Length: 264
Ligand code: DGL
Image (cartoon, rainbow, N blue to C red; front, side):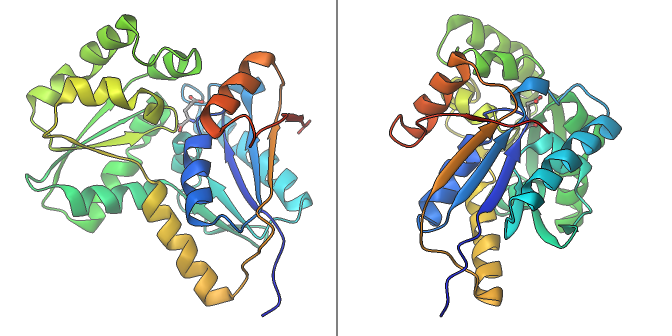
């Protein structure tokens, strides 16, 4: 069958979405990906839904100009705002809230799920709504953790200061004995070891990547639009040595040789 070499677009407010990209590349090594990190306007997590929609639409319109075959809203905060949108100007859209919720619902045994995310994600209750739609008998406890993003961006995973912040934010969820915790922000996997250490082995930590990959696989089966070039472009709205180093430590220096600066 003829290959579709158009890239898969994927975006986040910053570089945290590279954690999602990494999982997707593991599942689809043949696909070309075009990543956009809006680092010049980070953080999204404390901005209003209206502003995030405007930023998101600017990125989607850039991706449309690049002729992507689909777009993944990797940012949980933006996913909260674009939750009902199945497509953007003809481009199929995937978000991370549905997949993360599905993974949590199939993991919990005690029926108590915790969700952590940015203020805008938590105030939007998108995970809670989605989980209760899937199973109304579950209890969902939510907590915003605004300081996790700067800690992750500063590469402070494993630092004592991160342990203190983790303890402050998560003590209540731990006390309420959730057995499943959704890492509802792309940056949080970067602090996964700190969060796991505090919550203990009985708590399962959920990321959306693998279930999301399953949904994309279904899409490919339906549309037969796979590629086979396996290229990667990483574009950001600001370029600094700090972000390049962070991207390289996440993806491997051989994978990200440079950040391409874009203006939206
Ligand atoms: N990437 C965002 C998310 O997944 C968090 C970072 C931000 O606040 O911009 O929600």
